[in-house]
Length: 70
Image (tube, rainbow, N blue to C red; front, side, top):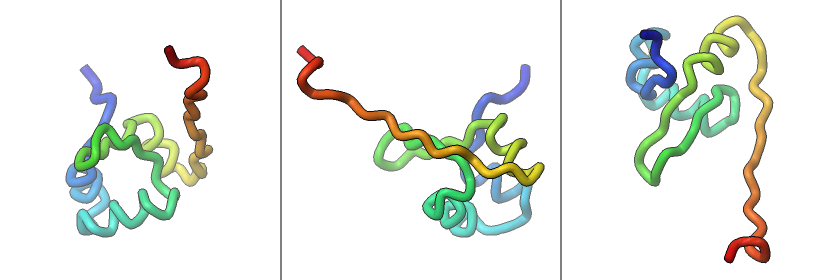
């Protein structure tokens, strides 16, 4: 079964760069990633493959309207 997500460390090993360089790419919005919790970041495999092919990620923000939340 194919992987759906990679860790920053796995991406760093594939690209042969440091973990900090991967995190820098994520923070500059160059590499698509999801923040699962305060300390956990995952990179979607499909987004990573697109990024490697030269496509720029489309940044989408999720907004929760507090008025509709009961």
